[in-house]
Picture 1 (spheres, helix red, strand yellow):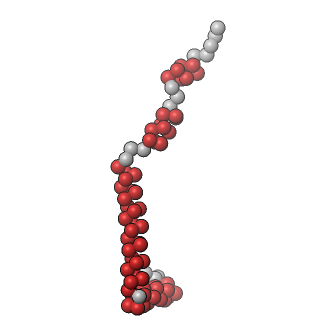
Picture 2 (tube, rainbow, N blue to C red):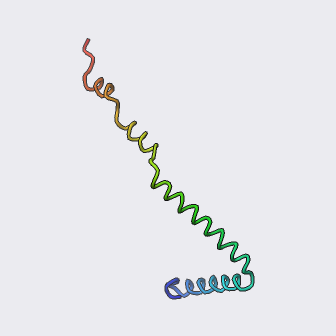
Picture 3 (cartoon, rainbow, N blue to C red):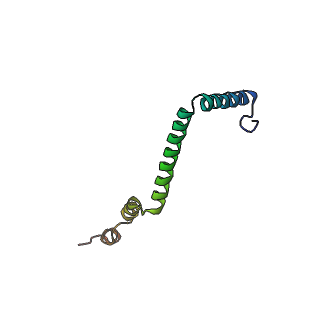
Length: 84
């Protein structure tokens, strides 16, 4: 328990939290399972979104890169002033 709380107050808080979880699991197992299931569902959804984001190409990145580089005609116009 020392690992979870470096101070005495932290260890007391950790012990209280563990006690509350043990009471929940022993006296209300269905509620504990529902809470665990909801947490796992959210974790799975977040993990799936992260993997999906890592594997799909980002169209916004392409637009940002394209907008930061001026077109060739605009670069030529700024490089050669009109003397006519």
